[in-house]
Every structure is written in C-alpha cells, then in structure tokens.
Image (cartoon, rainbow, N blue to C red; front, side, top):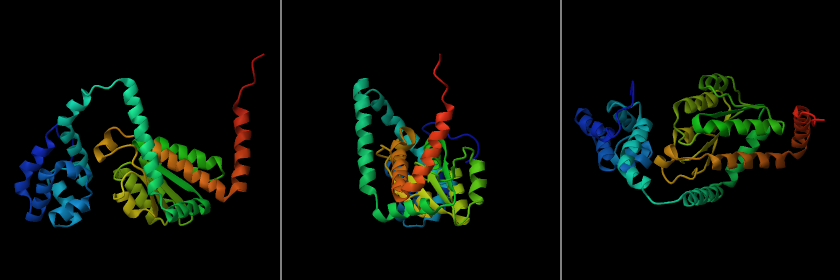
Length: 290
C-alpha cells in the first residue's frame, strides 16, 4: 500500500469491495478474511492458505491486490479495525489502578512460565554454542525491540564478547551484509514480520552467519530463516495484543538467561572481562565531595 493507511474501520469494507476483482483462488483467500476476521488476525499466511485451499504465495498476492503491502500489513490493520468495536467495552471495564497493575504482573509471570515451558534443550545448547564460538555478534531490534537489542549487546560486551546493536535500520542492513560464517546475528522482533528487521536477518543468513531469533510467534518470516528460535509470548494472548499492548520483558529475560548460560560455559573468560569492566566503571565515578 502506498501513502497513508486506510481510515479507521475501513479495512473489512475494502476487502469486501475488492473481492470481485480477484482471481478465483484469491477470492477464496479474501472470503476467509471476511468470514473469519478474528481468526485471520491470529493466523499465519500458511494457515490462511490451508483454510482457503491454496498456496501461501496466493495469500500474499491476494493481500497485495486488495491494496496492502502484504499479508502482515493486512493482519495489523484488520486487528486495528476489528478491535474498534470491542475497545469501547474494554475501556469502560471498571478496574482501579491496583487491579490493573496486579493483572499486568500476573500476565508477565505467566509469560515467563510459558517461556520456560517452551524451551527446547537442543535449541538452548545450540544458541549458547553459537554465541560462545562467535567472532562478533550483531544484535538487531527495531521499535519496542530496540531496547532489548541494546541491552543484549551491552551485556555481551560486559562478558568479553564483541557485540554491537546499531539503531538505524540501514546501518543494520549494511552491517549484516558484512558478517561471515564465524559471526552470529541475534534478532529481536515481537511479530517476527517487521520488514527492515527481517531484511537484515536474511542478509545475515546470506552472509553465512548464525541467526538466533527472539520472537513471540512460532510461525513467522523470521523463524523460518533462523538457525534457532526462542519464542516468548510477551505477556500478550493474541497478535493484536502483541502489537498494541505488548511488553518485551520476557525477551529481556531470555537474553539474560542465555548470557548467564554463556558465562557458565566459559567462566574464566567472563571473569576477566568483568574485571576489566569494573575498572572502567570505577573510573567514571566522581570523588566524594569534600
């Protein structure tokens, strides 16, 4: 889609209006969007393709012919518009500040438990070994994922691992192309579908680097190309919640857990690096005032 996004509430109407101009297989896809909008928001392109009896490429093509840049954009805007009707009742739900805070804390606790439950022993071992043997680590995260990427790079450097987390997506793409088979790229993305993030991840894989993905969905463009993926629900029960009310706390937990495991795998290297870091920190504090 070029230009501004469609007006609030207009996406279902756009799909209904555009269905007649589609090819028969694309019409079946659009009919899924119309008949099952709530399900579509949560479904991958492949799941929609299965429901419509067609291919994943047809789903993408149908979304584009309906006026969207692709299926990810259609999903996001459909989530926006389908959520409009429910939002009014949600906003008027009586709950005081304490109740809201307690509910959020409980959601985050459940997300952390889900993260632990979803961990695969082989994936963890692979991720730690990739980081341990890496010549350098490029960490990529945009939007709400950017602070997680920055913390990951800082903590890796603190234990003696060369890491960087450029914030500009052009710089990310350039740096990814300069990686090699001895390097590792960590990619943080809630949806796993953000275009600049996935493009940089693909560049890293093309360059031969290992790719560790931290995301919220088991099926996404990012997980499809990753060497190893760690899926955390981010405290959100749906794709709509992930893009509107999300937190990256569980991904931050995963970053710190991987680094703790990396320290355990090579404690002497980490100890020496931490000693050097403490020397630097000691130099930045001002003397006590007289």
